[in-house]
Image (tube, rainbow, N blue to C red; front, top):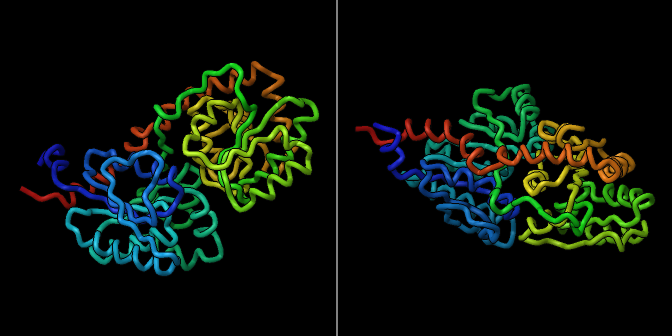
Amino acid sequence: MSDESKASHPFEIACCIAMEDSQVLHHLAPLAMHPHVTRMWIVRSRESTTGTIPNASYVLATEPTRPARWLRMWRECMRLAKRPQVRAFVSFNPFPYGLIGAAAARRHGKPVHFGFVGTDWYRHMQGPQRALLRPWVRDASFYTCTGGAMRNEMIDAGFDGDRISPLPHGIDLERFELGTSDAPDYTCIFVGKLIKRKGVDVILHAFADLLRTHPHETLCILGRGPLEAECRALARSLGIENAVSFEGFHDNVEDYYRRARIDLVASRAEGYPFSLVEGICCGLVPVSTPAGTIADHIHDGDNGLIVPIGDAPAMANAIRRLLDEPGLYERLRGKVLTMRDEYSYERATQVWDPWLRRITNDTAPRD
């Protein structure tokens, strides 16, 4: 049977996932775009309002408490696993959402994928509970991770390297176009949740340091979170509230990237944040910590500047260098622009291709 005729058979994928809307879009759209996938079932508490995932149908679990919601998700995953057209389950939230889907898939002999993107690997799979959790995910047929460093750590932890592929972050390059303004509204931008591990406090201290020598620069903070009031209070206490714009959460994040020059990432713990990819694709030069697998992609002095975790003076000096050395900024930005094609949906779809073809060959009707 030819590949073309195999692809004509119904081939559905199910996914139990949480995540924020933009991450659901970025993770699932490249998979849903694969020609062997005719429908993607997304088991989630709500429909995404960011972008459109091709061929996607939502199965909602809207119960108000987590235990009730998880039970509903389990029931829905069991129902989907019984469908002969559903040939595999995927997840980018292994704990607990991936395990919910995987339990249903295994009950009905369907292959399972686990995608590790950050804290799910560094906190759960390398944390105190690793001995309990690793056996539950070791028999998946396919794994994706955020870079070579994480892949090596997975192999060291006993995972089969032949089943692990780094998955490039895919985004809609038409949406995240290059900024064109010669006079951007913001010198720097941070995009993300206002939580401790994102290091927004470090960014604010760094910007206060920068303003001592560059008093007219501006910073945009785009996002919300439990530390928003604390961050606003810190900006006031540092005397920089007039230079910092707290813009909250917006779906049109790309419009804000294009109004800035430098993308700041101060994460204390991370995988490889989509905010870096989005900024790169809009032409921003990153100043970032090397948390997680960031250093697999951003190389100091080549396509960005790397600063130590928690080091506000180092971040301030890195921004200062980019402002004071136009040649450095333009050289780094030139290298950044060569990276855009790495983050297309099409490039991410290619990573899924061998696994999906194996599933098709194993389960397609035979002549």
